[in-house]
Figure 1 (cartoon, one colour):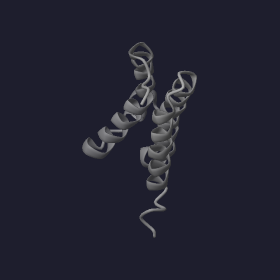
Figure 2 (cartoon, one colour; figure 1 turned 90 degrees about the vertical axis):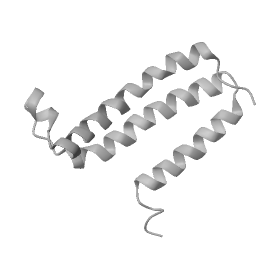
Figure 3 (cartoon, helix red, strand yellow; figure 1 turned 45 degrees about the vertical axis):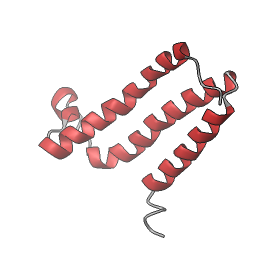
Figure 4 (cartoon, helix red, strand yellow; figure 1 turned 30 degrees about the vertical axis):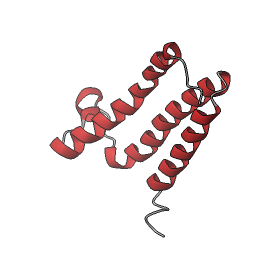
Length: 100
């Protein structure tokens, strides 16, 4: 199976930054009950209601980036695996699999 080259993959690692930021914000709120958005920016947003769409959007950024790279380099196996993982993740985040 053809893989994305190392140079492109290193550039694609930058797409994980939004996901890391969202996860850190949520974890500091859940573990330490600290709303960093309120402390630093004065924005009073409930992180628990904001987190789910932000997580989906940040994972979508990663998926789109890797999909474009896989399509440009004709890595069909990686593209198919990415689609399957993305669909299962979306189904799990929307609780469709849990409510069966």
